[in-house]
Length: 193
Picture: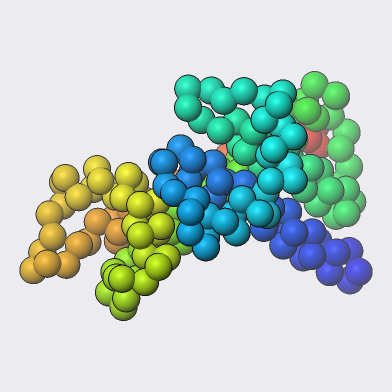
């Protein structure tokens, strides 16, 4: 029981840190201003890891690798801790073990990124209906717009109702299901199956 409680706490901590690092990555990539309450919160919660890493990890084609790489490492570390706490016997060779852990960490990072996009699109849609002039509305809109743009080209508004968020959310659900299947493949590398 203690192990399960510890896993819940660690999942919340590692998940929060990863989400903030991913938010920072997306905000910089999509050129969303950090001069708002959300941006300042994201910077304040991630500066401790991103700022020192920027000295040694350069950006890559405009992507903030100093935010993305630690997010992946946090998820890889959490996968290792989770497997250790659950008592999974990691009987594979060191090569398979590393590939399995890195692969599972990457899949978890992708899953977290999809959940972040899911949440951003939902908040953007809700704020556009409830309070489009809220201070946070522009942040969510600017983050969601690049992901919705391809769907808006194909599916125009119907009676001034934008259905593109529904289509994107459906596709995100399908991709999450595919990632769940891939997780089993990487897990087999860890247990020597």
